[in-house]
Image (cartoon, rainbow, N blue to C red; front, side, top):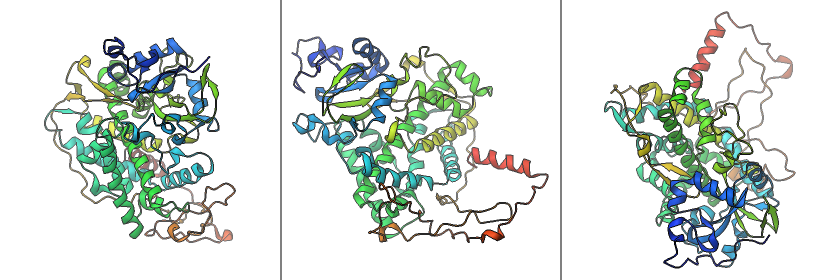
Length: 519
């Protein structure tokens, strides 16, 4: 079989051609943008699957050709085989021959940057290691406490009115509030930052300007943290033994911020829509037969926050799903179509509880490292909202709901609801607490391992080999400067744990309950 990409990118059919109105472009290929793709992506995936099988040729903005991978197993192979399908966008033949201009609407997504998402091999390990190590230092319980507080703050803004739009007044704002706190820039949270984060992935005329605003905010943050480190995510990246440059740190913060914001905002909106429109879903949730985390996981199957991820680039000529892929071809990880692949989900109405085989967070070495944070924001946020407003009802007919789509996601425009007005909740007015995971002091109730030595800040260790370089010895992570390092106990004096007092189980359960709800 020969490649179907035999036309010139950008060559449009004649004005009288009906293809203009059918989402079909040059060569008879279907467009992955425009009204059809935005209004009915599931229908488009079905057509592509029927016409081409598990891997289909499509057209991106400007009628630039690419491959959309529809099959579940084919997507797994795509994401798990970087030797065949690289993340380095500089391999894209359309970039090399000038078919795609630097100001292309999707440029903020595919333009190469010095970040792990565009790297393979040792460089990816070094940069990705800095990200995952820094994420491990986040205090999960502290984050849940902030999520609960921010959720109630947002609900307070409309609880007395009896009506609200849960997209623009809740789902669009909660993830950005949380991520700004985690990054160490709560003062930068505002409406402009929210809109810029939403706009830059849509392929709009203002996407490049929105991207520039995000980069400007993060550049100022990194400059501050180089001068004055703090116990936050930005400082941990700056000080990591991987010794990333300021540009690398800024670009990784940008990547994490946009991915976490877009995916989590969509996830929250999708979970709430399912709760409000599916009586069985609502009944199982309110009746205790389904927990909020289980509802979130079901939504990740049915309405994943990212419909596709762009992209992968073929290292050489190869075959995938019966299609002949040429070196330099672009491919998209088809998350939504993979989740509905008949080979893994012959019955789309089947309950998927407990099954995490979905590709909502992609897969392979580039699988989303912050998915647990995203799940926590959705779990705690939705739970806090439903606790405050248990009688939520959809304020319009389900058929009136509208979406805005692009090649990466499908965003619910609004979700009007009505409910019985309720008073505002008094909130903790304390400033944001430290996000760093606290080091527990050694007590008489546990045996502690010897303390690891605390290194100097990473920016003063320019000659140190990156912790995630091949063959490098593991390097200890620096502890927060305001948390005293635990004293290393002598092995022979380790204290044997005492028996718990009779009331301990009750206290333990209360502590777990408070932790889960973010209090």
